Amino acid sequence: MKMFLLGTGAAEGIPAFWSDSRVSEVARTVGGKEMRGRANALLDGHIKIDLPPDTLMQVNKYGLDARDWSAVMFTHSHDDHFAYAELQYALFPFNENEYLPFTVYGNEYICETIANYYEDWPMELVVTRSFEPFRHFDYTVTPIHANHLSDEDSHNLLFERDGKSVLYATDTGVWMDDTWEFLTGRKLDALVLECTKGYVQDDYPGHLSINDFLAVVDRLRAVGTLTSSSVVVSTHHSHNGNATHAELVEALSPHGVLVGYDGLEIEV
Image (tube, rainbow, N blue to C red; front, side):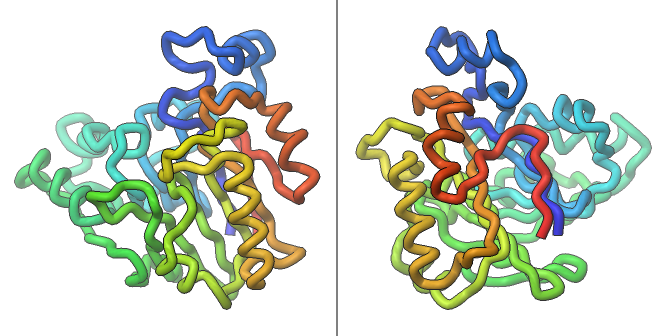
């Protein structure tokens, strides 16, 4: 499986809107990997994970074609992941499609929101629930419970195919017991995990700092879910974490972590 990280930034992106933060100023000066669009990914060229408002720009930047998508899978309903008004541009009268050419997967709130917004529009919506696997083509996809929104079944997504497994986990915080129990005893070939808060350690439970990120990775290694051959990649970095890409590499690479950047492709 190939996971293409189209964006690796948090909600504000880097450099952030209307911000003169140190991390934003470094990105404006240095460019390259310091520049981050809103987080989302593409699996094997056709499964789109989240739909941020940056998607059109990212698809064009990397020479991709949205007509290749077989699915859009949403993790939760925050705006930087769930720009659902963009879905209309896949349909007539914006083009020739009379039916949405891909399946949309999401939790109950997401599917209800889309159905209400696009009443009577021809779309296939599939409700997903934590720990209930579903099939898409030859993939088994299992949403697992993210510790992010108290009033919504927020998901991280586990993809399995041909004996390989990849977990995409943005906006998760430190998992609750049900998720740890699910992951214990499983093997991951790759983990893409948020590190939103960077060097900032605060009481908000819905995102990970560098210390939290490393604690999660260490625990997964201790229970055997991550092995010495597992690829671990960070994503969903915020300028408010006060860590540039170069500083994140300095902090995380000694722990066997690849700091994600826009345009990175991972293959397992």
